[in-house]
Image (tube, rainbow, N blue to C red):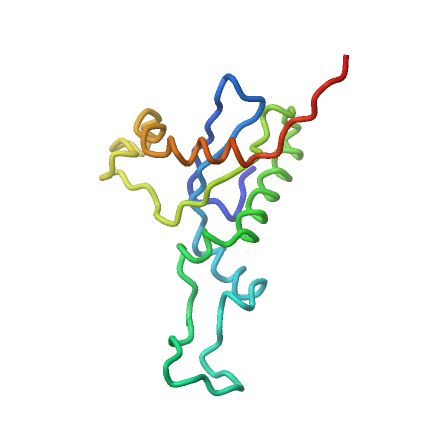
Length: 148
């Protein structure tokens, strides 16, 4: 099983935490049409019924991946889809991702993030995304505590 929204994913787990986080590169061919249908404010049409002021920025024809990756609703939709797939696969609680960061640029073999055989270089990923990982863990919902 895989999410249609995800082109690439790196799941990270800290042994001192009770959940996982992930860096996700969304699938542009799926996300952009979804955004046009579900995020009307993120995509402005070329032919508007209302004239725009002369000094206004030009209307967006196509949202950029950076715009979509910074949208909280997009992040939540992708996280919900990953959670749904995890439930279908009968994952246990600690195997679920509680937070994700959306990366607009795909990782390429020529970068420091992938080997020529398209395997992720985990150490390089961890170094590059260290601050993001810390922010993901800090922002993730707290696990319920057991009463003794």
